[in-house]
Image (cartoon, rainbow over all chains, first blue to last red; front, side):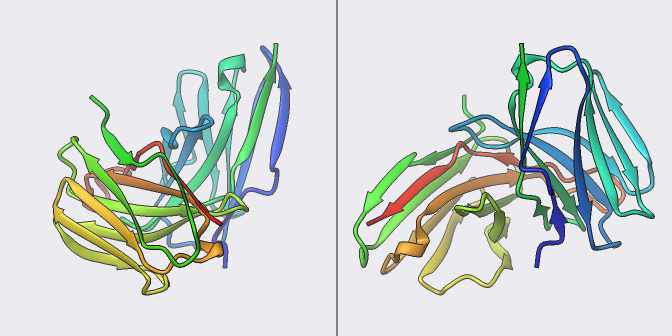
Length: 110
Length: 117
């Protein structure tokens, strides 16, 4: 039973444009949402998080938006760069338990 | 100065064998985890230890046994390996935050790819 879903397995974007990665969840008790980035043969690395009491969090080129009524969050990367090409995992946390989506593979085309 | 290191990175073995994957973290975190990423790329928690005590034990066959000799180490031993155990196993650590004090961020190792033939 997947509580966190990323329905787009892949996304291609031109360099300089905006990348939007989406994530849906089912459990309204989640209190934090996180995005991780993963390069091949490496472990996921933390990118950005958002508390369930916020609707937006920004860190440089990365912004996460949370829509609690729709149980949906998205990660915006602007402008996209070739080095952003990686797999992005959405995760949700009710404390020290984490539920991950299956990832979206982003390719930024130079 | 790797934060979370796990060995071996690759492991190829025959069905029925017993194998171990080791994990060490030098971040001073109090909680360590094992995650399994299967062929569908689904990252699923297996175990979590907080200060050497087991706190999360998901529905995992009892052929999998974690061992935490101290809070910087969490090893995973697998008995009687089966084909379905083939996956990438990720170790992770975190410093658990009090609720409302911020996100509990995991730091992952690079993964150990297990192939069972």
